[in-house]
Amino acid sequence: MVKIFPSLIPDSDADFVDDSYSRTELDRMDGQELQSLAAKHPSEDVHGRMKADDIKDGLEGAKRV
Image (tube, rainbow, N blue to C red; front, side, top):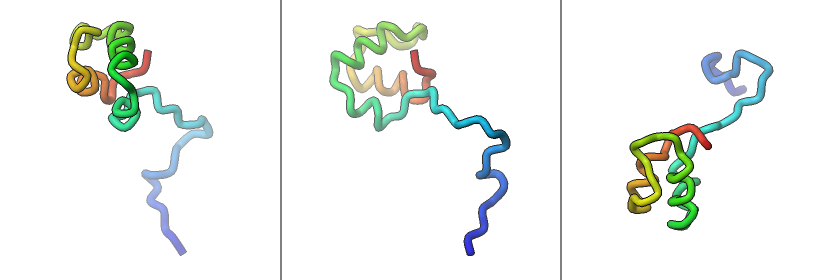
């Protein structure tokens, strides 16, 4: 029998929606896709003229556009 800690069980009936970029997801994108995402992102810390690794660092965990 497996015991699940209550903190791991969602409190509501609503489905969990991940609305942030993960590093794995960003690593699968090519440079052009990353630049496009960065250009659309509202943050002033991330822009389309940055290097791919800098864009990944800036968008990781950020809310999707």
